[in-house]
Image (cartoon, rainbow, N blue to C red; front, top):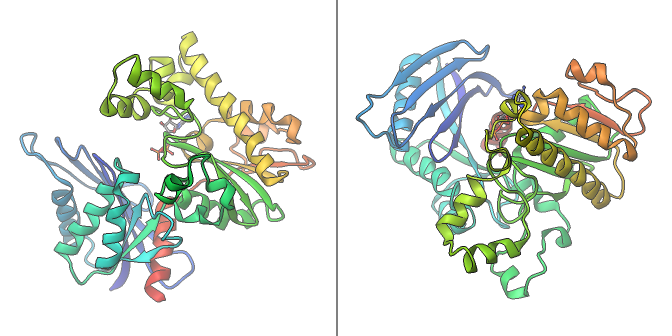
Length: 392
Ligand code: ADP
């Protein structure tokens, strides 16, 4: 019987999971991964093996409202019935916010949970779901060690000025500061970098998915990121605005009579690629569309990514390598090409053929600054952290 780590990433209407064999090797081995979609409505469970073959599925009856707890209970019983050669030894959770206190993955106990509860107001859309998955699992299996892995932790190495807003000190002390997100993805890229750009010290990583951010990394440590207090800052995303003149918020309240609920919807759900194009939040749909609004949404995305490369290179006082990752970064040669062409002034000599072949190196051998495509794997990073915490 092999020990396994169950990785849980609980969102508002979905629960993603993965199982890794903890063989004691540096990298846990993937056994399978899956998700439960449609939580809160008519839910659908799927699980695939390590090669991507569907090995289990279940659709709840339409008239049943499936909660996160129902989903987790089903997952545990599915594992017990179908993966009889593994013993779940621990669970590792993606937790969006670790505040200032948690700068590394942490074994969860009642005190840790109480501290994480206090951070709910800083990430009201994500933190409650992350914590409720921990609580549910604790009530189903109180003996199971659970580890919290934070999206913010990797950024705690940023210098104080990168974490500070130009706000009165009392607000900063109350927690209104720049935390940074997508840290598990950036950490995974840092782990992989020696296999690619082994001599790069100053690296800009572009995590371009439906949530998108960029990070400036010096010698493996985060020094700046485009996401700040919340995961709506920085780049325009699938449905999120990215950075916005704060005066727009005042205008929304004072002139348009909008309240917090309306503004939250505007910032997180109605804007970004979807808002500008009026067509879709999915980059693939926009690339395949001949509508001018779709082109404009893509142009805006490219423009902001390009601008941030300059800003992050300034934070690093130079740049040795640029890395593309996540859904758009890994899969869209067109977006990578347009971003790299605009970054020629920084010293990137683009290799079009290598880019079509997905690199991994998409700059020429003699390019002063190298550019790369490196697939990220946040779930694996959580498994690595969890295995490490268990051994400590
Ligand atoms: P998240 O984890 O934030 O949900 P992902 O990293 O999975 O996001 O990225 C999802 C996004 O990647 C999709 O919304 C889609 O826009 C984009 N994407 C995936 N494949 C392609 C592709 N071939 N070309 C362009 N965009 C793509």
